[in-house]
Length: 395
Image 1 (cartoon, rainbow, N blue to C red):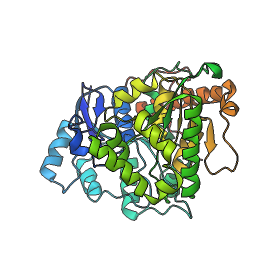
Image 2: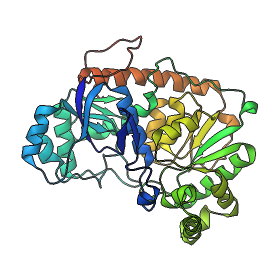
Image 3: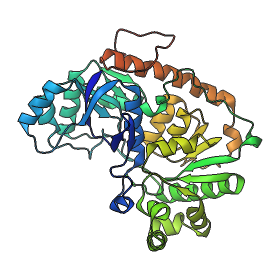
């Protein structure tokens, strides 16, 4: 049973391997704080796949080297929770000094690169150094897809394995498959919403938001929908806030130029008031998706939570990150910036989801190989392909 340090946790751990936001029951404490609960999905899922007896956060503030030396004696390795770390604005000021002094293996588990809307990715030198320290400490780095693998290769790191994301495998059942019910039987649908977006992610904000608005209204006209938010402040206030905070949230949405011009009309307001879901507890999202026949929308991890429970999902891709996940798992997807119209019937095709099932199974095997070759104590079940001895190098 391993003793594990965690870089960049995203919530508090309870009942050994469950994650929720810090002091989650104190709603007012964090109601004005944006945090993406999707990050907690990844943390929670990682814990569910590992065997461990001891867990704590690795302190990355101003280094206390006496403390770091003590941690080196008390822990076996560090886990870097999968997230969007590889981009030009990323920085951990003290991480290089801490990891050099610590000298433990750093298990980078499903990390990914974010491509800029224009031009080539340019990584800061300190981030390159940090990534090389991590790569040199282990047999392999686990990345979410081919683009992230290529970005690492371009800076001289080729001990890379494409493993997707731990969230996809949180049920730890290699026989899991998505099987479509007849479309006419679909009633309960989850729609993952992402109102806030940066021009650094999406190249056409007007198209991003107007299409998002139309998708929500179209699906709400057709199905019993639950709008699944993941952390935006106004959406949180509409779920958890006082009556005054709810009205303040509505006023803020109407005052926001992007929202008021392209997204938040009267129909969306009505749906937000009646059919919006948010929670600071990962288990609540899993319980919700298990009640749905379909989950689709803009949230990468909200959609992935559904697929991890065998619920069909369709991705709406708008940046390199969402495209990369869809490619790794062969998830049916619609390009938001495509001029064509989205028709659900075009995607309600079992052959499309059979491609996903096959890719998911292969990637499950890759994730297990990654953990094995890095000597991580885990619960993943060996697949038919068995375990390879060597790291798959990036071509």
